[in-house]
Image (cartoon, rainbow, N blue to C red):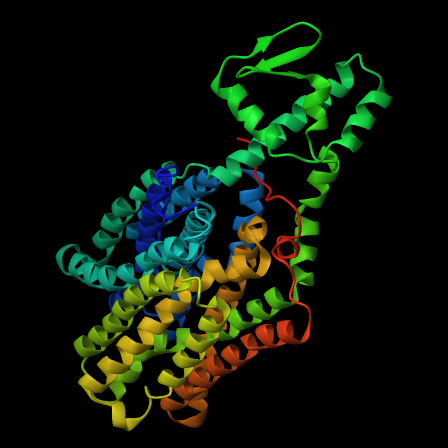
Amino acid sequence: MACLDVENPWGLVIIASAFWIQFMAFGMATSFGVYIVELLHHFDVSLAFISLIGSINVGIFLGAGPLASILMRKMSYRRVCFLGAVLSTCGLIVLPFTMNMIFLLFFYGIVTGLGYCLLYVPSHTMSGLYYDKHRSLATGVATAGSGLGGIVFPNLVQYLIDEYGWRGSFLVVAGINLNAFVFSALLRDSPLQKKQKAKEKLAIELKEIKRNESSSQFEKESLIKDVNASELVLDILVAKEKSPEKNGTNGKTEANGVNISAVERQSLLTSQSPDEDVNSNSILSVMLALLKNVPFCIFVVNNVLWNFGTVIPLILGPEYFTTIGFSQKESATLISLFSGGSFVGCVLGGVFGNIPKINRIYLFIVVNLGVGIVGLFIPLEIAHSMVGLAIVGVIWGTMFGLILGLLVVVTADLVGIHYLGDAMGFLMLANGVGCIIGPPIGGWIGEATGSSAAAFYVSAFTVIVSGLLMAIIPVSRKVCKTPSKKEQDFTTEVAIPVG
């Protein structure tokens, strides 16, 4: 399957939808800091409590990934996104009527955060399911929406606050968020999902055959054992759906000019029974399979440490920049440069990850370590000028975006395409944990040491440790036998709901 393949043109629509969903979701999440000043003036609460609302929003946005994965197994990806659009829009549209901070914490922190999670996980996963050879480029372009949202939304929100006040700005943002319904509606099933649905549909038909077919049980079992699983059964079913079925004599079905008896259709199925196939794709069995995948478990821990380290500069950076002599406007400009670098990095991550000669795991490790090393320059006085921090910010943001662009494709490399949706749920939980605990611990370290720079040193060293941890994966593969692609896919099909 090729990128921009004329056989799969809807993949471009999926990428565009995922791009704009991330643009809105991450843009709104990163712009909450703009509201903090207004909320401090309006409500008599501490800065720590208001900051906690933003942390809860991001934490649930990322940490509710397993819930999104469970829903994706129970219903179509499109329906999960519609649910996310409903929750996020409802959470935003009631904010202009906020009477106290508990109200804001519940509707913005929890409801809107959960809604954006249900929008992000299915759309981002589907951008990876539509392409195989160029999956890295597809997911990289989709992820670039988060970087662009981080550039546009804070400035847009500030303008809306100046024009309509903070209550009115929430109402406008809620209106913008209604576009999520449009982008969700565009999320058609990928060819892989359609094939799995076709197989499940045939399995249901075969249960009826078992009950109604006049052939003896011995004849059926013999055919099942003698014939191996074949993609032909899927092609037959697709052809049958495209042309009207004609029922012939002797219990045969004619599909697109091919006569297949009921028992012959059953023999084309995999030797694994439909019930066994369902059990192998149960939530518990998938969870156990992922936990047995040691490289993926290492990747999950890496994501916790990575997000712990990288969220500290993004959340505590504006306040730190003002303490070293920069104005609030200059601090906002520096954060925008971080986001601008992330936008470019997401696309570059997709491009580099799509080059066959580049090992994506090695690339991920090198860039991961690079983010930590560059992060060490943020608290150094040698970089404490507008130009110096701008250069550091662009480089740091670009490498940060590279990691985001590689996230889905590296996950697919570790667990296989069939487990991509479930694995993304676990990674989102890991990301949420890191994002929730990072800023509070970073702030506590700064207060305990009396130095705001201490939090940034801890941040950088944590990111470096996460990169060194990822290096265990290629080392272990050198020492142990490298699993085949089939073993990495766990030889099971992705669970796709019908309907």
